[in-house]
Length: 318
Image (cartoon, rainbow, N blue to C red):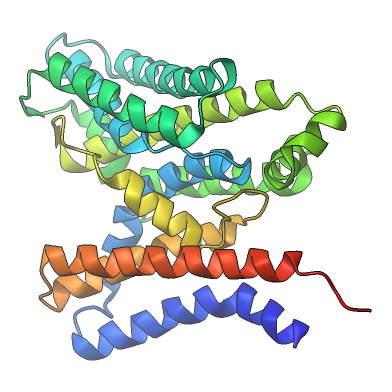
């Protein structure tokens, strides 16, 4: 029974992904085409990068609900620096990464210094970041970016857009950190039991601050990828992404209470949601129906996560 449960825990999401691919291929033959899969891969890049950033916070036992609004604010600032102020692309990109890291650290400081629960702290900063985005952009849409900036998502390296390779690099680096470094072990340890980690000598407050900063940095990279794809942005771009990324992370096996998760599971979770969205669009399902399906998936994923936790914590009878 334990082996069956372990196999179910590890491989269910993979089976779900293949099941969805088969289902939508039957519903609409256009789904199972090379062009559609290439589009899926390209469209998933900034979702994957954002979800990876969020995973650093989630695995450590916290949460960041403001990532969608960070995407919006960073995107607007970078776009205005390039278009309105006509600064060089590398200067705007560097400023965007610095801003994103600062926004993440700002969340981390509120959580660690003021000792406010992460879900409350980041829920509050969503409003702050959204207001700043609208104030800076004056609620206007910004378009026509330099060709060198658009190259990130529209260029080609060995037949794939550069942002796909960038995403693979980020995934590989994070997988290495999680599995092969003391830093990664400390992240999982803190998510499993923060008090025990502190007693073991891990500087949990400093670590949590760093993790929020990493999350903000990766969100800034994702924001520039998102803006490059659309070749336009405004203050509504990115808003709502936090819900999709959080759902993907939990579906992919990252525990909502921390201490557990894998990169391959995260990738599978993102592709499940992307396949669902793409398949439902090709099948003619409306936007509101897609929201309902995503909500049901999130509820099911959280319920399954709680079931796994309760099972693992259940005392064994000798």
